[in-house]
Length: 334
Image (cartoon, rainbow, N blue to C red):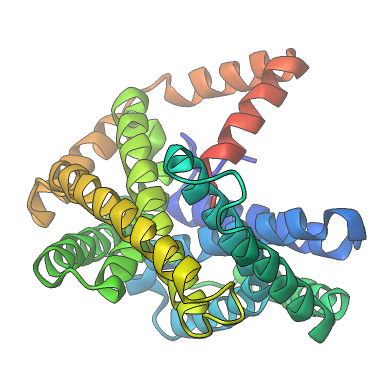
């Protein structure tokens, strides 16, 4: 399953192929109700849903009303699934802070906070019917698949992508500047969403110039990861500060919030530093350069033959294929 456009296929073919692959993967995973791997299944399904929404944003000008309907449906479904993943992310964030500052803390420091985070997670799981939600989500995704073939992607070539590429890049650039000037959590969170959209678009266009696009992918992955860590810290601190007595008392909560604030400062500083490089070009110039790469890629006479040859070589090497799939899965962390 390749989350990128391939040589020899039209934009319409590429968009629909990628969307159907991601929806099928998510629906299939959610239908396999193995309770021991529910968290992993939900995590992977949410990643696929986010990828599809990223594709939708890329061709938003082409889809019109269909974009609004499908994006809203997938957004709402992702939010419902996220409720069962967020508690895990919060605990992982807590553990990461303790690991980072372990030299400043006693071995048993802040144990009461973690204990109650685990308790809150259990209470949340008991309050909802996860199996039912997974089955419902699978049905919604399969229903969405049935309509993909009818999506009205009339323009082809780079013209079908230029509007979505430029607006997403422009929005990310503006979100970065707002986050820098206001230094508020909600603005950094909004920037993260826009950076992630751009990351998906760059991944789709990886074949235009593999080395250059992969370098940009890596930068965007670092950026959205740091901004995601920042957001998780905000959510965690708000949760424990809203009820200090439940989470070990004022002293423990204040200590953790202070450590989290120090870490957030570092995350935001390096995000802004990297962001300045990622969004260095003006939107029209950035998209114009991509169009030149697109045209060169499309006019390479042996491009499709080379890609097909590479695919055959990969198919002959199961171990290498598995390693490649694992690497791609890691790069798609939500």
